[in-house]
Amino acid sequence: MSRKNIYLTCFLILFFCLTFNLLSLAQENKKEVALTLEEAIVRALKQNLNLLAEVYTIEKSTASLSLAKEIFYPRLEVNFGSNRTEEPSTWWLQSSGTYITKTRSYDTTITQQLPIGGTLSVSMSNYKNDTNQLFLNFNPYYSTQLRFSFIQPLLKNFGPKVAMKEIIIARQNQAISEAQLKSQVLDTIYQVEEAYWNLVLARENLKVKQQSLKLAQDQLAKTQKEIAVGQQAAIEILNVQAAVSQREADIVQAEGAVRVAEDRLKVILNLASGLDLGNFTIKTLDQPSFQPVKIELKEAIETALANRPDLQVNALTVENKQFGLEVARNQLLPQLDFNVSYWSPGVSGDRILYLNNNPFTGVIIGKVPGSMSNSFRDALKFLYNNWSLNFTLTVPLADYISRANYALARTELAQAQARQKALEQQILLEVSEAVKNLETMAKSVEAYRVAREYAEKRLEAETKKLSVGLTTNYFVLEAQEKLATARSAELKALIDYNLAVARLEKVLGTGLRNRNITLAEIGQK
Image 1 (cartoon, rainbow, N blue to C red):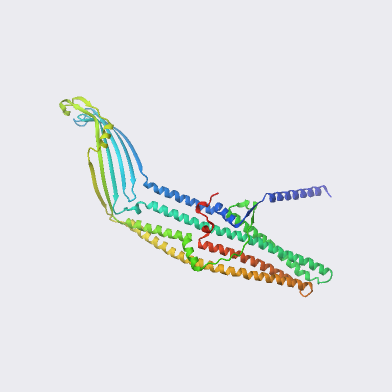
Image 2: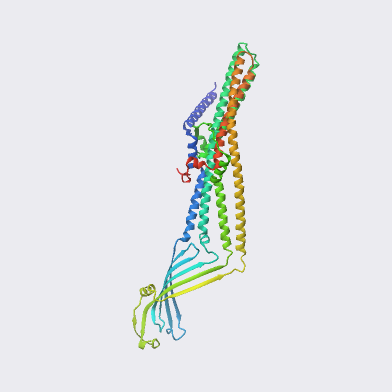
């Protein structure tokens, strides 16, 4: 052997050893997650990405409701202003040359929106004026005013429904989000059950295929021995070899079905994604069982109409549109506002004393000090009664927008009601089909069980006949194939029955109630 061939041989040996070690290490690092069906459902309710997205929608609607409620929180407004003007004198009452005026104002207002649509406000304002103009009684001059105001719409925008419109809509949207989350939960539960049982079916079907291959391999070994001793013709081996090859191909397909079913369940449970899917193996701990479920169609329909979350979503949507129509109808009314105010003034400042009490002399002989606090005190004493009462009527000459909004709201309500009726009919159909399908699947389980028992007896009979030379390998292999088919059909019927039970639970909307699951538990680690 040449040196080049020796190097090549060593390289290939090293490559195969390294590959084998890596594969062994990967197999050792592969994690196995053993789950019952209920454990899989609980894991999905905590980790499924679609459910997590719906949970965020609930949080968003809750935040929107809190934001809408802020309209009824008291609002505090504080204003401060300062001004200085300097102008030349234009008449004899002003100072000669240039007169300067300095003003400063403070305003504080607390406003409260009322549930009937009105607005109540309390304000305290203070004004200071300081100038070098002549012939003034007070300088600097302080003015304070305490004012109470109430504005109430009497036609348009009147009433709690219009005033609390944003809160009512936000509360309805929150209820809709909760119902949508419930619907998503029911869908997820069914998806988990479907994926779980399909994985069980795929693995059990693989076992059936492996058993069938073992029977064919045993038959091949037996036929080879019998041909060797002259008990059978050599041509008999062809049928057996063909059966072995076919069943080996069936196993390849069955293994592929297992991988597909397992990956689907992994994604629903959010165990891994992308390239990480191969790092996990799910071990299913539950096996399908036949537990008869009896339910009357009338009872099932009543249960569905009371529990279906999608029906609740549509009912809430109808309420939403009905409320929108009422608001739009209110906006067609003319605007009539009632406005009442009551205020108490307070005045103070440095009172200027003139010679002979005559300001026109221009001779100042003294001052009586005043202050801003004095004006505040006088305002709080309600020394002077001032009030105003007004009604303001506003009639639009053209209200195309309001009428268009009303027509749109009426159309949307009719559309929502039509969809509600259509959904009710769809629910009746789904419940009827689910109940009838459950009855059919229950009968199928029994029928396929009997068929499997007959297939086992037939294989046993054909095997005995072959041992005494009364039949051929062809009929034995055919009996084996029919038994494998019968076993697969029985298992599928049992899985289909369990899925029919899950489907009935889904269309009835009772999945959460049956498992004592609350929406607060969804997405919680």
